[in-house]
Image (cartoon, rainbow, N blue to C red; front, side, top):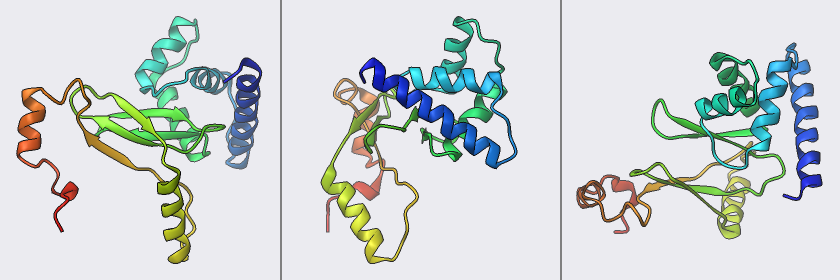
Amino acid sequence: LPAEAERRSRKLAEERFGRYLRDHDLKLTPERRAILREFYRIHEHIEADELLFHLRRAGARVSRATIYRTLDLLVQAGLARRIRLGKDHAYYEHILGREAHEHMICLGCDRIIEWLDPELTSLVFRNCDEQDFSPAWHSLQVFGYCQECAGSSEAEKALELGEDANLSTDS
């Protein structure tokens, strides 16, 4: 994003987050503001501990627990998306001002590849309409192996065993 658009996006995120917190009888503390600003400054998927590292490197005094709680609040406020990689592993991304997209997640190196498909998005919303379903958000995650990891013995063994029968193309 150009610098001016990025500043507007961060300002809008801060306004929306402040409103969300007030509506839930919470405060936009200096720590939460610092987390929000740093989170919106970073334009990639990030783990909570990586965000903690960025904040501490910038001189912010924020606890790990405050980061996790604030990220959860950002997700609840509709300003961030949590991408789960198993039971105890998650990445976060800010979503305000970004196009809806999906994710391919490499099981070998945890690389996250974003992709857009307007036809898929249209299909999702058409199916919601047909079922009289009001979507709040959607997420599609495809797990597999990126080009660099596809030739590894781990990937070949997993693919040979049919690690996910749900991906079968047989009718």
